[in-house]
Length: 566
Image (cartoon, rainbow, N blue to C red; front, side, top):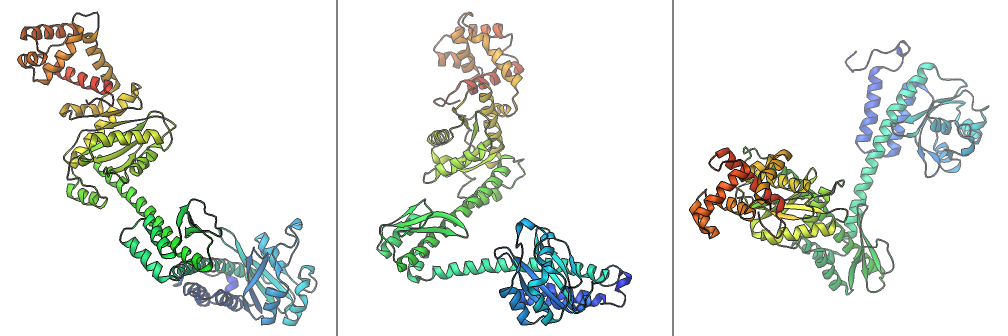
């Protein structure tokens, strides 16, 4: 390999164009594309390079125009302007003059284009397909041709056509080199077309801005309104006042003598409809108003998408916290979303009672939308099949959770949605455990077919953390442990469970339990003995006490409905 980075040349290149000439030519073509040269400028450069490197007399660069069903000549070397004029305007080279004849019909160039394979004509005077251009060819002085298609990975762009003034075929070496050059030319023209499309897109944007400025005073008023935080309704009211028209937004995108479409960059947002027919001046003004409305709608969409993405990332970090996350950094990020993590917050989780694809994402969207215009201001996203919302303490958690649960179940019609509001937490680190606990409680309830309900968890203490990893076996064990205490066949069954609950709640104090239940202390002692007998558990055994406490907590989880607190 030499210093140019190209492989050692085959024998047939010895004495021909040098590596340096090839490298310089290809670099010149690439540079012309990158410097935004015109299509004709790039085409002529390719044609001249081909003429010089391959050693042919004349060259044409043809690009397919499927809309016109013709190959346009966009670059030439050794061809007269009259010939270019004839090919482009007088006798165009049709891409497909007769579809029924497939690859047989048409000029050599069009057949090479359609077939994506090179094609040679040793003598154009005897080739019937060249008849329409034979007279011009004789005037130009060429008698043979070779056409190589410009093929990219996506399509065929055109043809590189080489002409010689003598009868005969190109050598195998010339044909191979022409095809190699055609491949590079195809890439260059593809890049040119992409740049041209980009330029046209910029021009369209520029035109949109110019249209926006046609009514400068109205535009300035509307933009100032937007910058001051004005809504779409505010924009419409201001425009109505300035134009003396009654305006309203319609979901119909079709324009009429009273209606102007709202769109930007190909995205449609309905239309603005006036109460009377629009003259040309009013229509131009409304087009400006429509553009401002579209830009504001688009800005809100982008802001919402960015906010949702940031909320998802933030929630992921909060809810998977391992206590190594910088709380100040999390709070700074939350503040950008209008949320404060340095104040008490609660986690609320939602899960559909029947599996529905992507429903958690939909629920998160409903929560965000429902909260707009209220005092709730949550951060909402989803993790797997669970939608998650962080609710601030000042949102009145009881009312806010009821409102969100109700709205979600109104909007979701394919299934019911259950939800759990976790206990209030004072630090971001505690939100992760609250989320795990609320999610576990939600799934436990759904496994027992408690569907479409809202449950609120008050502070469950350290014991509540066990709910995050409770198994189905543990749930069954806890239910079986308490079952004898509620069995009607057992004596005083209606008083045993309340006694146990009160006893554990008051630090195993018989005296406090008796006062709370308004019974004698001996009655409490008898009931506790009865509980130990029925359950085969000792209230003096620490492990047994933990069993009782967890069983009561699980019972609360399974039996509470939205009108009670655990």
